[in-house]
Length: 468
Image 1 (cartoon, rainbow, N blue to C red):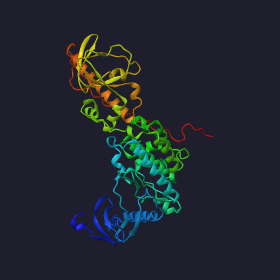
Image 2: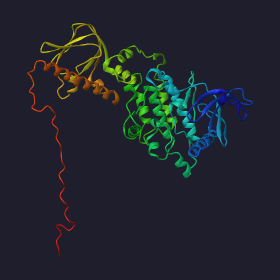
Image 3: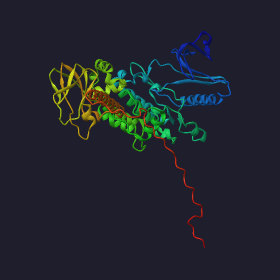
């Protein structure tokens, strides 16, 4: 905080320092009378403008909701609320101070936690949500940013400000719940505005689990409308397809958590926790090693992979084979029926047709793309021989078919663009051996003007009717 904004006391609590600041709230560390441990205070100031009146009413209701929910919840994996104060121009919540980090810090592929830790963390979340529902509370905004974890994997779910009290059946409560939550983690029924139960939190937790295991969301889109469509209609990819360290048994758990059909989804958190515990005992903790990023760094520098997201490059490494090939090796034979293609990571190859050299290709270039793109007749159009020892990324058709939709489409666009670029270059090469082109009489490009013909007058209403 700036000096002008510094606060010494909030009510009876002495402020120590600021912990963080968001769009609507400031979080402060403070001392509480009669308490040894410090507390965290979430402070919100309400605007006085006419335009902010509706937003202020909404914030006040969120605070009132969080305070009401706090009185119901007492669980080791849920942030404990000590006090809730609602004033005319501000409101604040006094809560347990936790030193952990948000799970959002571990949702990219290069920061993923070991598998056994992920399972243990989500297991505790399952039990916490199961407990909350038994108290009549649905969170409705489960996402990585609302889950804290420390180095000992102590878990705390926070921010019950959007929680739904299932014991309250009033119309005002049902209209208030519409449109809240974080879209990427929302269940299909939540997006549709249907009545909610504990299964909506389990769906969101399934998305969190998917995110922690793969470094990506199950549904990704360019805009909210596309995202909503996918959540309602599309099937998510299997986590084991994206991260080879994820056991196939985990696919079934996430698949059930993300079921669009409520009757097929987990009934409660305890049921999901039971399945997670079975997988947990299949995992050997000592098997986990940090990711080797050296090959990823090499791919980032290659021309062919420009535009690929880092997560997609990890997937490329998973579905392809990294090969070291010596010089003078026949990599592809003209006329052979095969459709695999590959990218030269290092070294140089010679491409020939009918024993005549047509080009040499080096690092960052793809070979075999025409046979792959021509699936109706996948036949090699040229021979490829290594001129030097090369590092080669071998991609088979069957392996690429297992890639996620985003990665598959990225490959398709790159291969088509490469084929077009080479065909254009071939046209320019052929032009050097062609006859002189015929010159047209007129040098201006032919333009065709279209004129709309007037429509016939419509027949009268009584046309064709018989008279009596």
